[in-house]
Length: 136
Ligand SMILES: [Zn+2]
Image (cartoon, rainbow, N blue to C red; front, side, top):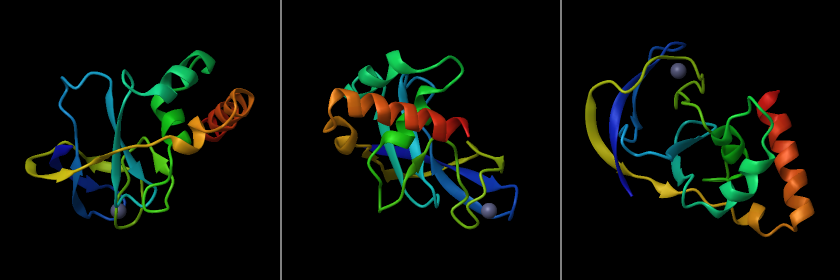
């Protein structure tokens, strides 16, 4: 889908870049980012079949979006994360984001094919591993 992009700036290297951001009204929709910060994918908690499997297994204090990012299929052969990343230096410390709107970009849906093809017991293990990864 087409997503509006907004100015953001990295606190580490000072580089300005554009990030797709959903409106505040897009309830349950999230944008994930590749580890290098160069590509994005979106997913909807409400429509996503993997969320229904993951949500009941989450321990308190662990964010669904963090675990879903960790379980998503890689994009451009990179793992996804739920937080913003500077595409220049890969820092996750931003000076600001959601600045002035500038343009739009196509953001493809995140897929969870690898996760969904697992057996139920393998899915439970994958969720436990993902929880450990995001809590680390
Ligand atoms: Zn940077």
